[in-house]
Length: 182
Image (spheres, rainbow, N blue to C red):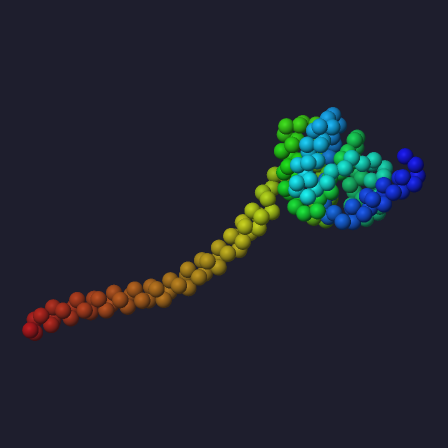
């Protein structure tokens, strides 16, 4: 590759890095072209783009920003996946693919402005989807409010039931007295 071509590749990578908030680095040694194409298509449906990159050019494109730590996770042939939206769903898809194709392995990544190693990427892949986590959080946050509303409603309800019982008791006490005087 000539120097001009390298400069162009670095510029393209810098542009993609600036636009994509999440980066997943994987090793793919031994996967066939057919397998890689299958994975790329599956990831493309999720809004992710996987590229096989030259490590030296990718390291130059990373520069000195916080993501430069990704260079430490680039050993052997690597593919870099750029994710624009939900990184966890992409990680789940890659993890499912890795179960049937043992040759795909996580090396590291940059997700939600944090650097992760391979083990942490596997843990992220095991997380429930973002929508489910938001639903769980909403449930946890609404539970104390629901209990408070129930408690506040119980006081007037209990008072009303007590008053009704007193009225009924007095009516029952007054009924035999009215029958005796009649």
